[in-house]
Structure formats: C-alpha cells, structure tokens
Image 1 (cartoon, rainbow, N blue to C red):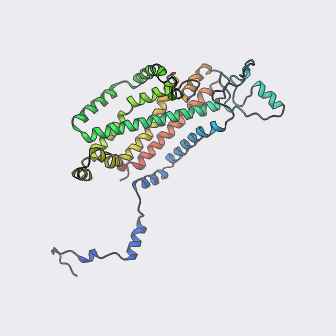
Image 2: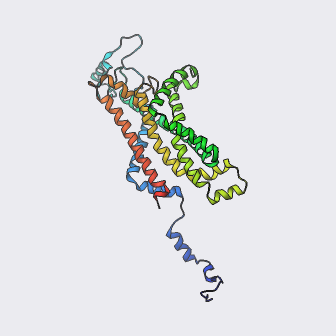
Image 3: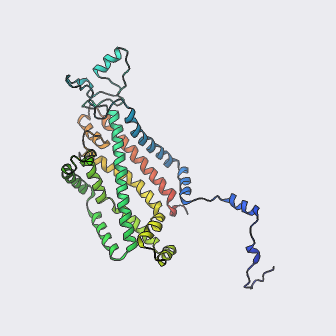
Length: 352
C-alpha cells in the first residue's frame, strides 16, 4: 500500500512481523544482558582493578587458611613451659633464625619449621601474628563498613523520600557531625567506650571479641555513616520524582515498600562503590587507633598494634615495623584501586 506524504493513515508495512532471519540477526547483534553483567564486563577489562581484587582475595584467604595449618599460635610464647625456666633464646629472633632448643633438634636431624619473620620480644612467631593481625584488620574494616552501610542507607533513604521537616532535621544532624573534628572525637569515644564497656560485657559472649573492637564498631556507627547517608539521600531525591515512582504512589503503595523495591535497588551501583571505598578507610582508622593503644585487646594482634609494638626495638629490628606497614599499605592501596574500578564500571554517568 502506497502511503501519501500528508496522510494520517499508518503504514501497515511497518507492522509486519519480522522473519526468522531478521530475528536471528537482531539476537546476534546484542545478547540480552543486565546492568550488573555489563558492569562486571567493564570491571574485568580494567586490569588494575582486577589485579587489585586478586591481591585482596589472596590476602583474605591467606589470613583465614594459614592460621589453621601453621604450627605456631599467635599468642604462644616459645620457650615457655610450665615448671621449667624460660628460654630467652626465642626472644627477638631474626627471620629464619632458631631458638636454642630448635637448634639442638636440627643437630639431631629433626626438621623444625622456620620462623619466617622471626619472633617478637615475647618469643611469639611474628609471621602468624602478622597473618592474624591482617585477619583482624580486614574483619574490622568489613563489619564496620556494613554498619556504616546499614545506618547510611536507612537514614539517607528516609530523609530523601520524606523530605520536608524530616529531611531538614536529619541534614542538620549530619552537618553537626561533619563539623566535629574526626580524629579527636574518635580517640575520645574509643577511650571512653573501652572503659565503660569492659564491665558491661564481662562474662558474656561479647567478651571474646573485646571491648576495644566493640567500641570501634560503635564509633563507626556514630560518626562515619554521614557520608553514606548524604550520598543515598541525593540519589533518592533524584529518583523519587521519576514516573515509575509516581505511578507506584498512585496505586497506593507505602513509602517503605517504594524505598525497598524501587529506590534502593536503583541506587545499588552507588552503594556498592561507596562501600568498597569505605572499607580501606575503616581499616586505616582501626590501624591508627590500634597504634595508639585503643584498638584490639592484647594479646590479639592487629596490624596497627604490631606497628606500635615494633617502635620499642625500632633501631635493632626495623623489619617489625616495615612488615605490618607494608601490609597495611598494600591492602588500602588495593582496596582503593578496586573501588575506583567499581566506580568506573558501575557508575552510569561515566559510561554514557
């Protein structure tokens, strides 16, 4: 049918069903995919981010598996036996050195597992303490970021969706927290909570975790959620005026359902990126608090506490400070590079 230029009749040829060949051609042009799959593909193309993820995964797996198979414990003092005099030859061993008892066993033809990083001033194997300290630092950084994520998403989504006075009051609280000197408040809170929680958790399950780690989690929950809340609030403010949200409101859906089913899922890319960048910040905060003696409880090590202990013998055993410092730098650098890769892969504004 020939269609005239100024005719209002539709062109029926445009509504003819596609042939099988045309359908196969369209399928071959681009396979069906999702936002997450596209983001993963872009992330894997980023060699720096991929290498950083492999490093993080290797360090995390090593910190979990090695303590299970390593012959030395992080808190076992070598050369100390009940009813026997202390063998001080195990103290301050350099890498791959042995104590007096171990040397005699080697002379007898027995195999002794080496101390790869030597021992500390108390005769404890330094390698397993670094491995265990890495596990503690990673665990604290991960769980602290989860706390920040939960509080930030909850407060930011409610503030952004409700608007009005609720948004005004929440943002003023955020501004007040932003105005506080972070370093000073963190140190003060950690000092006060460490003392106040010691008697409260005594004899409970939380006593195994320690008052210092619990105080760290509280500090993160009180102070470090504001950046996440601001970010989520900005996303919610832009999304709540979209047509699909207005249509959902028109059907009578509750605000909590809209936030859970529509607004937060559509902000998930920003959430993933922010969480990945929050973890190194949490690890660094835990490290410097442990360095100041406000971190994990002794004898449990963390990378920051190991660096702090190494200051006593800095001139004689500088490697004790260098090793945890290098591990902290490697973890933080890898997480930051991986977070940058996530941002480049999942931020829609950067992929237009």
